[in-house]
Length: 172
Image 1: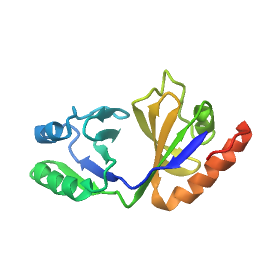
Image 2: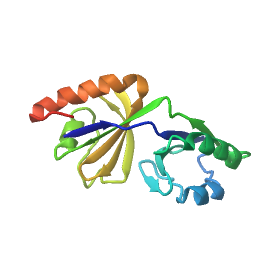
Image 3: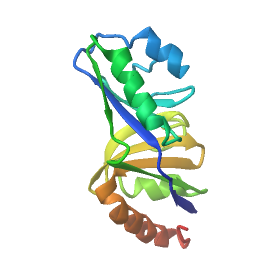
Image 4: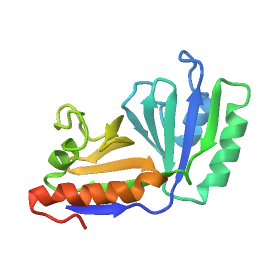
């Protein structure tokens, strides 16, 4: 099993107080995505847009240099709408974990049904994982990404290392 704490990235949280409001077309065209409206879905384009709630999204860009550009651009594009953007790049950390038994390992920490037909690649959900609020994203058949508050990253790493012992494998 391979575990990697992903390097710094740009994470912008978009929220709205109006559940009926559609994302501005300028956002969709600039990001190259069709804005996801169903909780648990992901739109892939120039960035990834994760719908983590009915009016809550995370925009992920692997380039940290995009922080200032995205934030300024979102402020302008969202002005006068019910949407608001907040840079949470420094508040959240991302861990990628992959391997043949990753679903069984993750099932030890949460109550989500992680079987492939229920939680296929391209699915994302918020849950309590090992007592922490975590966003779990399935990026491939045997690859997952965990997004967690930075203050929990050490505990999550230790929990994953301990849980992997049952499978007689090490999480590197």
